[in-house]
Image (cartoon, rainbow, N blue to C red; front, side, top):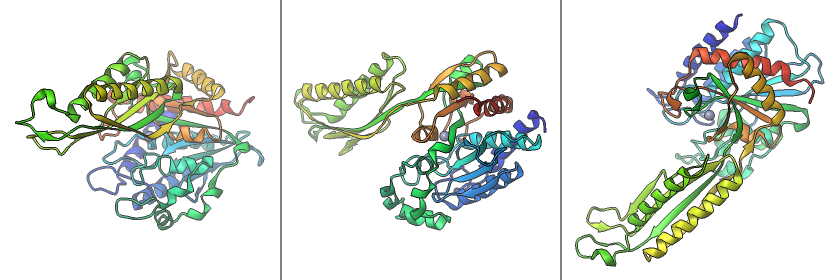
Length: 411
Ligand SMILES: [Zn+2]
């Protein structure tokens, strides 16, 4: 089958998979849900068509195996996730799985066996919507799954261990789902860019240099609630005004530091009435940078700025770091192979840092990782308007075909 047809096939499959949802009228597919089970069945059937044997592991990852020319060959892992956010776009996750299957289909149709096996993984949970715990699938394969997470409950009170059992998985077997790191050549993931850089450069694909590390903090300014009509301005302890000052400080610091992104995405004021001075303001802070040192320094400066604002206004501050992940640097050798492959199919191979987290970040605990980004319209993702073109998918398939053939050579 020619590559043109494979790109079209991927687009058709993206549409078919987008029909599998747990909410009518929108695409929502969360971990261990009946919709995930149907998605795994459909994608599993495509894996079989492409010449792979298919299994589902203890946590619910779908894994297709394409054998090596010799039985003792190592394994190259390809893939991405099949779960989605709520009211999702159809490319985030599935694109990487379906492009990988298309590449295997091409190998199978040309009766090509490589000196290594290839496994395509459809990860069970990357977005973490159901249990607010990301990378359940890739952590299980990498051997970094936190078994304590099995006790977490979803919004309906269903414990994760029960959800996995209901799905047909085996919570007791998750430790055993870990792949043997000695057999892994590496993990490569294709994903939509989720940003505007490739569109600006007018390029179909780009190579990821690193996945940004991330700090999330909960910040609380505690002032004093009071009557909006009677407390004079100079005697107020307005927590929301302090928070407003902090939000602008966050924006200004990030604007003046290359590659840093910092966001206050949530803010609540209490008691929350039009005639009451806010006594308390809670906000979320999200800070990301591909270089951990830059992120840690910026977070420290923002903490200090929040303290200064609180002191100036004679109010109290609480600062709690709730999430802290280091950056993942993509593997030099695999990344170079991807760059060389990209240069054969478009005029340049731009290197991009990923601001979003990916399964590749979790897989880096087990093996070298590399990522290819595909241009997406307007840089939009986590939104039904998410879009990638068939022409760009065609380039991505061609790049991955080259990459796969090269990746087993000289370590
Ligand atoms: Zn994704």
